[in-house]
Length: 479
Length: 95
Picture 1: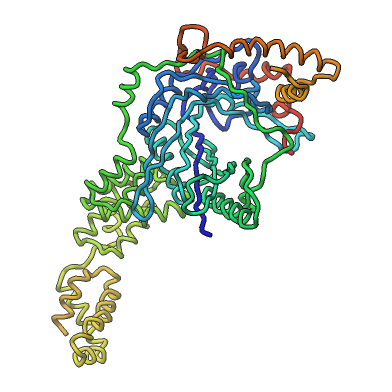
Picture 2 (picture 1 turned 60 degrees about the vertical axis):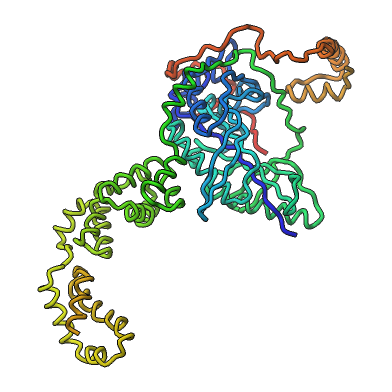
């Protein structure tokens, strides 16, 4: 039987506010434990929360960016459960009336097609603290610096059918939140976290299968691996006559397996109710309108513009718009050299490979966009060949100066002077008289292929600097 | 609504409250009385009535995003039963 995978994602995004969602403590990572935890964050008796306006604003902007309904009246509720890194005994969150209602995220797939993924809703809530389970004499250590950090939880509909779609969705969310500058979206730092709801059903069946929720997926790569391994487990289970149990499972990256987090405890019963400490939050029409008007150009719009204005493929456009810095870098390079396609190629291939190899982001790139643009310009105007460009590119990466400086200093300028090339051609022909005879006696349809040998020899003595077009022309003339 | 002893045991577990056998009967009766009141409320026709999130007819005042708290760890930790390296220590919570 063939099976269809159904995936929905829940993504937690930490907002880049200066202070916490309900207190004036700093949101600042990497500090000594419990130094950014105030009486409110610690749930000391008598303390009361006050909502951070910036958190509301950021959540509103996210909602507007995915074309969602903004609930101008939203209500905070208490989700009750006991865990030591949750000092109040409840998480303040939203349930019945979240700030962001249904919306749409368009994802771009590698085969050039796009797909709309529906967003069920997104709500504001507070993050919990951290529990450290290393050995503290058989006890656990609690750091509440993170407690109260504002989060939006984005809940998708089960609209994805492959792990690739799930990753494309996650990347699109990442692009949106970084374009909006509401989060740094670093999965490795936990500022963007992903849970996946996964189920399988026989191909063609309408009804959804029983889902499991996968936790602990902390990188784009693990999303794919965790989903694949869980889908395999569910299919094997069903085909062996078993049943999938609705439960939470933990992905173990080392063993590449998922395992049940089921404990002897009774099923979760969060007993949500509206938080009596917080009144409903009401946003004015003017506020929402002002936020709508001040949205930056978003990834989807930028992608479309890169296709229309720069003539790029949909896929290249989606790669280049995954973050705002890369998009800006490309546009600067394209503007400098006047050739968008060449610029897109250099940015997505050569530059991306070097950045990747050195584990650097585009903002740490040692080659400025202007310098890359200038180098591409030199390819276009015939000053250097594409091959020599790679030498220039590496020298720029190593900080040896701008493209023009390097071409000058290393004497890399392409030789187009026909006198100089003629001399080199003569030298090659003289040294290879046997090949010259063979060429002259060969059938005309064989000759173009044989010409390659002579071109190669001339390029060799010119150290790659002879203009290949000129070399070809002169060779044909002399032969 | 009548409450069973098992309901009280489940509630006690969720609330992390230890209720002894001798208290169990009394607690069942008292919570049962509260639920009777809730039953009366439930019996009212609320068709067309918007759910109320808060009894006050007011909306939340928002705070500007500013850091107003500074590190007060020593003071805030002073009555914690166990601490180490700036962490609160609690009974081990992982299985």
